[in-house]
Length: 181
Figure 1 (cartoon, rainbow, N blue to C red):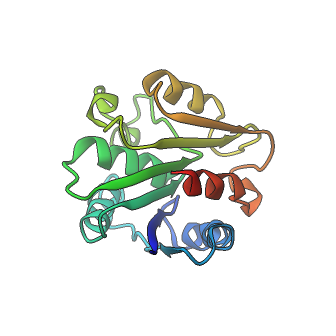
Figure 2 (spheres, one colour; figure 1 turned 45 degrees about the vertical axis):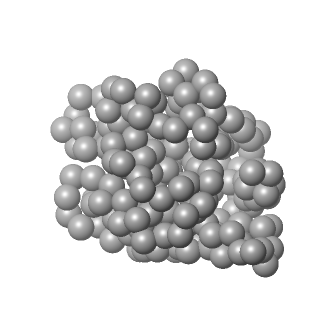
Figure 3 (tube, one colour; figure 1 turned 90 degrees about the vertical axis):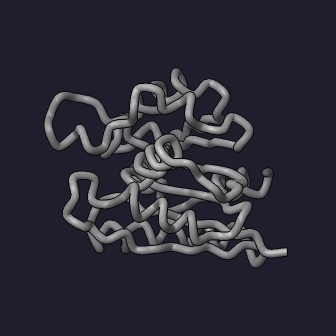
């Protein structure tokens, strides 16, 4: 029986989508033929959050039950926001978040990306939740993983020594965790 996964890319441009396509290819190779990976392009719709919450919510609502959700960087933070702010009617088998920024600060542009103060209470603790972050990430500070660990102590956290923001385009550790659920 095929397992279905949807991967949400980071950034807000076609170039970011293309960069994350290498992560998707690594995942497909490591998971093998028992999985199908859907990789939608999330277009910047011009709203403050680039339309991510709405687009991600629509993708989830049209997916099959027991969907596995995976996202990178901005896509990961927006997936987490979407899951904590909306009633999800599909059964989610697992959530895998890579290099997830924890948005903070007082700048106007940051407000659209912030999680709500009670976000952790809105997540289903029975759904496996994994975070991955490379210590040498040049885009999202490694300390953001510690913030999530504080808010979501039931989640699993994977600290990776090297790989940068793009995990050296190798998602072996993520594929192994997906296979474990």
